[in-house]
Length: 173
Image (cartoon, rainbow, N blue to C red):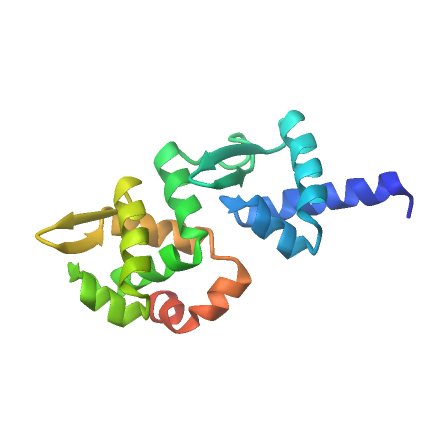
């Protein structure tokens, strides 16, 4: 296979992975493709310039999405989906979906096994981005139907789905 053919094949694979897992960040994409960050960045930049992908910066991550014409997600859906691509955020969201009620910090920490400070960091981020709300020192999903719908239609990457298979199965199987 020539160098040009290999580059086209990699770009095709990038487009496939992004279509399957919209909101994926570039580092995770590189790991899934077993490519270096630099090579992945190079090809992602080319695809962005050709408008075959779109990207949004969210916290420290560059999140990738198919063009709106291929997958019309509104801003709230993109933010929510992008957040759900993070391991701890997904774990917290799945826990809160299963509880279907407001939960105190300590209960979420016990249920997820996350340390108090790490949990606080992620809950604060989830509140700031509108995924979670807090009232009377209790946390709950702002729109559980949206989270459930997005997770059903845009499943987590295989590693995360496997890691949280018990929670996933309780919700969707």
